[in-house]
Length: 122
Image 1: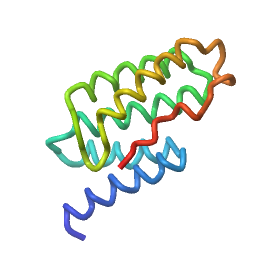
Image 2 (image 1 turned 180 degrees about the horizontal axis):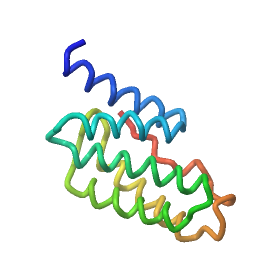
Image 3 (image 1 turned 60 degrees about the vertical axis):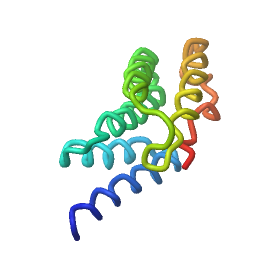
Image 4 (image 1 turned 90 degrees about the vertical axis):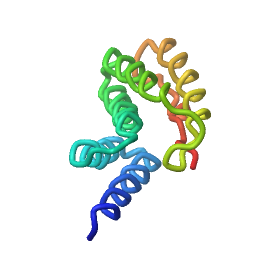
Protein backbone atom coordinates (compact mmCIF):
# COMPACT_ATOMS: atom_id res chain seq x y z
CA UNK A 1 0.00 0.00 0.00
CA UNK A 2 1.45 3.37 -0.90
CA UNK A 3 2.09 6.07 1.67
CA UNK A 4 -0.66 8.44 0.49
CA UNK A 5 -3.24 5.69 0.75
CA UNK A 6 -2.03 4.76 4.24
CA UNK A 7 -2.34 8.39 5.37
CA UNK A 8 -5.81 8.64 3.83
CA UNK A 9 -6.91 5.41 5.51
CA UNK A 10 -5.57 6.44 8.93
CA UNK A 11 -7.37 9.77 8.79
CA UNK A 12 -10.68 8.24 7.74
CA UNK A 13 -10.45 5.36 10.20
CA UNK A 14 -9.97 7.93 12.94
CA UNK A 15 -12.87 9.98 11.61
CA UNK A 16 -15.17 6.93 11.57
CA UNK A 17 -14.13 6.00 15.11
CA UNK A 18 -14.80 9.56 16.26
CA UNK A 19 -18.23 9.60 14.61
CA UNK A 20 -19.01 6.33 16.42
CA UNK A 21 -17.80 7.93 19.66
CA UNK A 22 -14.95 5.50 19.94
CA UNK A 23 -12.62 8.31 21.00
CA UNK A 24 -9.72 6.12 22.09
CA UNK A 25 -9.55 4.41 18.70
CA UNK A 26 -9.89 7.76 16.91
CA UNK A 27 -7.03 9.09 19.01
CA UNK A 28 -4.86 6.08 18.20
CA UNK A 29 -5.39 6.29 14.43
CA UNK A 30 -4.82 10.05 14.32
CA UNK A 31 -1.81 9.78 16.64
CA UNK A 32 -0.24 7.25 14.27
CA UNK A 33 -0.91 9.59 11.35
CA UNK A 34 0.50 12.58 13.24
CA UNK A 35 3.61 10.83 14.56
CA UNK A 36 4.55 8.65 11.58
CA UNK A 37 4.17 11.25 8.83
CA UNK A 38 5.12 14.89 8.56
CA UNK A 39 1.95 16.57 7.34
CA UNK A 40 1.43 20.20 6.31
CA UNK A 41 -1.75 20.22 8.43
CA UNK A 42 -0.24 18.41 11.40
CA UNK A 43 -1.62 21.04 13.80
CA UNK A 44 -5.12 20.22 12.55
CA UNK A 45 -4.54 16.50 13.15
CA UNK A 46 -3.12 17.27 16.59
CA UNK A 47 -6.25 19.30 17.35
CA UNK A 48 -8.40 16.29 16.47
CA UNK A 49 -6.25 14.10 18.72
CA UNK A 50 -6.62 16.56 21.58
CA UNK A 51 -10.38 16.78 21.05
CA UNK A 52 -10.66 12.99 21.24
CA UNK A 53 -8.52 12.86 24.38
CA UNK A 54 -10.71 15.54 25.93
CA UNK A 55 -13.67 13.18 25.63
CA UNK A 56 -11.63 10.26 26.96
CA UNK A 57 -10.76 12.33 30.05
CA UNK A 58 -14.37 13.41 30.42
CA UNK A 59 -15.62 9.84 30.22
CA UNK A 60 -13.09 8.86 32.90
CA UNK A 61 -14.28 11.63 35.23
CA UNK A 62 -11.24 13.87 34.74
CA UNK A 63 -12.91 17.27 34.20
CA UNK A 64 -9.65 19.20 34.59
CA UNK A 65 -7.98 17.10 31.89
CA UNK A 66 -11.02 17.36 29.62
CA UNK A 67 -11.12 21.14 29.90
CA UNK A 68 -7.37 21.46 29.41
CA UNK A 69 -7.37 19.36 26.22
CA UNK A 70 -10.37 21.27 24.87
CA UNK A 71 -8.50 24.57 25.26
CA UNK A 72 -5.42 23.10 23.58
CA UNK A 73 -7.38 21.83 20.59
CA UNK A 74 -9.17 25.17 20.20
CA UNK A 75 -5.76 26.86 19.87
CA UNK A 76 -4.74 24.37 17.19
CA UNK A 77 -7.93 24.93 15.18
CA UNK A 78 -7.57 28.73 15.34
CA UNK A 79 -4.95 28.44 12.59
CA UNK A 80 -7.50 26.96 10.17
CA UNK A 81 -10.61 28.23 8.40
CA UNK A 82 -13.08 26.92 5.85
CA UNK A 83 -12.67 23.33 4.80
CA UNK A 84 -9.84 21.13 6.06
CA UNK A 85 -9.85 17.45 5.12
CA UNK A 86 -13.55 17.73 4.37
CA UNK A 87 -14.38 19.18 7.80
CA UNK A 88 -15.92 22.63 8.05
CA UNK A 89 -13.53 24.17 10.55
CA UNK A 90 -15.65 27.29 11.07
CA UNK A 91 -18.59 25.18 12.24
CA UNK A 92 -16.23 23.08 14.35
CA UNK A 93 -14.80 26.14 16.09
CA UNK A 94 -18.31 27.39 16.85
CA UNK A 95 -19.28 23.96 18.20
CA UNK A 96 -16.16 23.98 20.39
CA UNK A 97 -17.16 27.34 21.87
CA UNK A 98 -20.53 25.83 22.81
CA UNK A 99 -18.79 22.74 24.18
CA UNK A 100 -16.51 24.94 26.29
CA UNK A 101 -19.55 26.64 27.83
CA UNK A 102 -21.08 23.23 28.56
CA UNK A 103 -17.83 22.02 30.16
CA UNK A 104 -17.74 25.12 32.39
CA UNK A 105 -21.26 24.37 33.63
CA UNK A 106 -20.47 20.78 34.58
CA UNK A 107 -20.30 19.87 38.23
CA UNK A 108 -19.64 16.20 37.46
CA UNK A 109 -18.79 14.30 34.31
CA UNK A 110 -21.96 12.21 34.63
CA UNK A 111 -24.12 15.25 33.88
CA UNK A 112 -22.48 15.91 30.50
CA UNK A 113 -24.88 16.01 27.57
CA UNK A 114 -23.08 14.01 24.88
CA UNK A 115 -25.15 15.80 22.23
CA UNK A 116 -22.57 18.61 22.54
CA UNK A 117 -19.89 16.42 20.90
CA UNK A 118 -19.07 18.20 17.62
CA UNK A 119 -20.09 16.18 14.57
CA UNK A 120 -17.01 16.97 12.44
CA UNK A 121 -19.26 17.76 9.52
CA UNK A 122 -17.81 16.74 6.20
